[in-house]
Length: 307
Image (tube, rainbow, N blue to C red):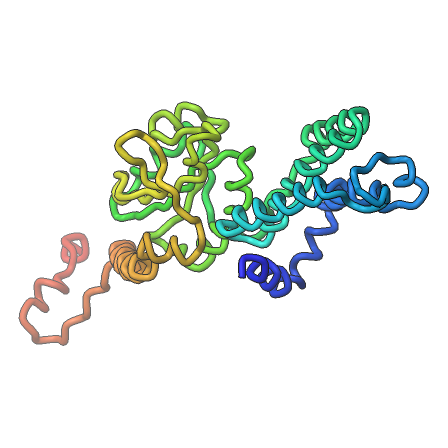
């Protein structure tokens, strides 16, 4: 079942996958993930490789290599149980495939291991995974604007994501958060983001650790009237983040977004009606002649009486 879930997810999103799968990052990752398989199975190359197989066939996997590949499959399945997007599923496969390739190449030949490890380091430095560039209703804060925006209007509710660009989890969550902003953004319910990897003071003030070991990235915090109401993941008494899956369903349920959206829409509508009435005061109706107050209302100015 753990294998079928990512497969079905991949097939379901296949029309959208090809758009980003052909980008340089994924193309290079694909070929690097298959590097050991290509070396071991290519005629003329595999003939010169060492092997621990009893039959001496150097163009097939030996039992140690099969163990490494089986262990890789188990790790990928466990990691993908918490994956929330197809990109994250594919990214986990590429990541642990490269780790397995490093182990297999070092076991096969020290020089080949060093060469492959060098390629991985160069790839990590020069090639970054593509960032989400789709539609969204999100306001990006800096260290100078976040406090002013959160306290500008006490009737506004903000959901703010604290993220870091270097975090793979934040990169995977970007499309999910953007989709939520498109569905639930309204006049009194707004979505924001702040890069705490860039603004360290914001990280300290709102107590979101940027350490990869803390597992606090990303963090979603709900603010009402400028004050924090709740956050995910929660922090226990020892200051550690409680494990939590950032799926769209979990966020809608935990933050009660459907009810929050309806209340915010009504509040925004009432605020708009009051604003309209204050901008355009009602015009007084003209009274019929002979009605009380008519003489006072239509009394001629003194300048006309003198004439």
